[in-house]
Image 1 (cartoon, rainbow, N blue to C red):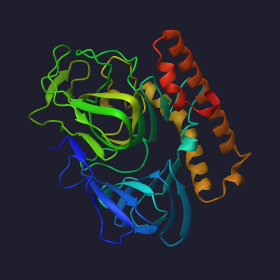
Image 2 (cartoon, rainbow, N blue to C red):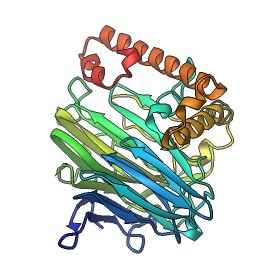
Image 3 (cartoon, helix red, strand yellow):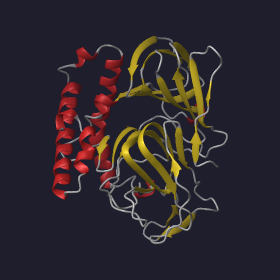
Image 4 (cartoon, helix red, strand yellow):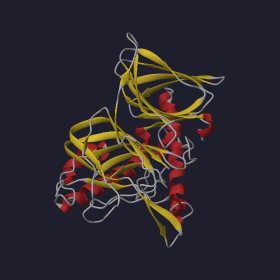
Amino acid sequence: MEKLIKNAWQYDPGAAVATARVLDREIHPEGLDIRRHRFLRPGRLDGDRHAGHIISVLRGSARLDVSNGMKRTLQLDAGVHLYLPPGKESIFTAVAGTELLQVSAPASQARGKELLVRDEAFISASATASQSLRWILTPQYLSRRIFLHHDPVLLSSAGHPVSWFRTTMFDVTGLPLNEEGEPVFKMSYNSRTECNVCYDVAGAARVRMARHPYSNRDQAWGPWYVLDNDSTYHLNESAGGCDVECRIDEATQTRQYFRNKHEVFIKNGQVTLCCLFDPAPTGVERHRPGEYSDYEPLAQVLGTAQYRLHQAEIAGFDEMVDRLSLAKASGELSRMQGTEYWERYLQGREAQAGIEANLAAALIAEGKGRERVLAQWQLPDAA
């Protein structure tokens, strides 16, 4: 199965919309369809009411007319994401240059029953004084966690909740070196597959995947793949496959698979992508520069005191994000000012700005120059 997928844009002469097939549910292990849609000129795109969809506006702007008895019109700009459940008639009308990214599953894999709108303007304000919950800025990347394990959206064909992130990985200058002496972003998502749809790549960027057996020293690697705006790299080893290492964790007596170990190199730019995980991460994890970052197996997170606390903290912010996002898309945001949801937004944004300011100060003290890489990605209040 392909590790690097290159867009093949298809459209009829004179058509308003070009479409690229990224994943196909009949072929790829997640059992989901992923499509990119690009408006070559002003036009419309009709939705499929028999499926559930995650849709992200990558560029431009679109109007969504949606109904299942009662019609609603929403204005969606870049940075807005939504979940459309089955049964809703939908039409997207967009200006030239607009690009949409769509993940679809049959109704049997549609976990959510209600329309969700999530605007990054409000996702960025999901933070307590001590913890970022959905807008995660690290020395290596900015991750916007649009849909996590607890969010009612789509299931993979294996019955797992899937997640949807928008992530920007930064120039690797100043990061720890790999065995070959290059600074790289190191990841090893051992418990899940991962699809990374790149659409905003600047500078020199490439990715490579480890070969089995995995090793802490003298790791064997596959070739480097060059990334551009039409690339998707798919970490698609399936749990239980003959090419995937497995051991029994003595503490939990559960199987642990070793897969999807990879490195990303970026120079003089960044890579922005939308990322799908199967199964979905919970939002409870840690990443450290120089180590191979991982999301722990769900069995080791669900039911823990840490996860219960995370769920309690994120619940109020989720309601704020959903209500304000829908109000903004409906042209009614001014009515929300002064409400408890608006106050929660202001408090969350201030907390996120404080966390980012503390991170920048710590990087300045480190003296490796990473604060200069992060500066353009900090919230305006924290810059």
